[in-house]
Image 1: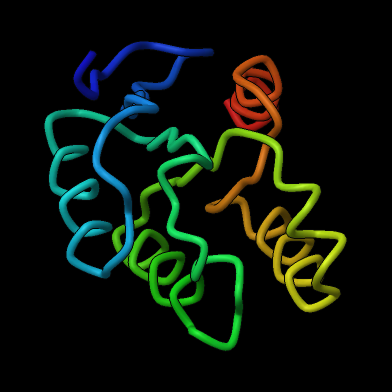
Image 2: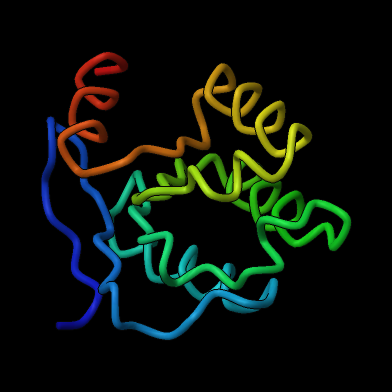
Length: 122
């Protein structure tokens, strides 16, 4: 299934296919941002598409990707279980806590939680 835009909780969301290409570089993130220009306000990206370097903050991959989404004023929702990564890194826990307060980047366990967050900002 390709990435598709669908309405969720009153927002147009680019639903990224879990089996789609991995997001490993800044260009991959820009490709998702470009795909969102077809009308999406939010990109729902399964955690399985993120390269492991995303969760190792020393690589700066997470910061660069998150900053690109913020610069384009596009919400990014990472969907899936990241508990293993959170247990391994207090810095990652702090980054995710901060990102949730910004309102542009969310880490949610499933699509139901994404809908809840979208309804809260609608």
